[in-house]
Length: 105
Image 1 (cartoon, rainbow, N blue to C red):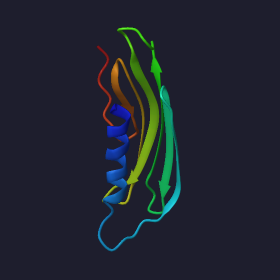
Image 2: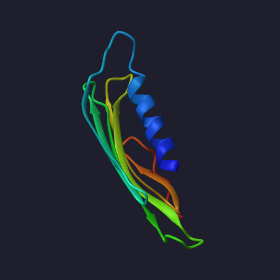
Image 3: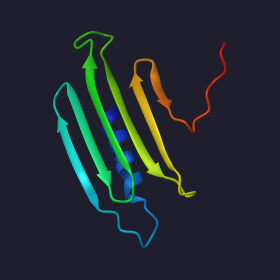
Image 4: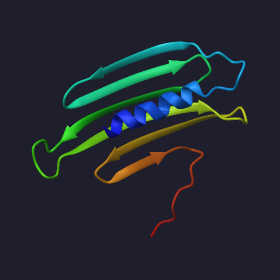
């Protein structure tokens, strides 16, 4: 369910291009199974996303989905931003050159 929400949110970002610019879908692939999924898409305006997820600890109380992926978009400033991430039982862990890094504890 979580991956569906993430996918829909990222797809909405792709559709939110400024008025007057019609982005074309260059690639759109997906494979959804009962215990895993993956998708990969790219549009002509520089946006793209890919992710793969798999259930871990199936049938136990610790069952969780583990997702690795990335997305990129062109900001209002014309710069292309890219985020890679892991989302699992430890939460959402994004990384990107434009994201702040927490100081060492």
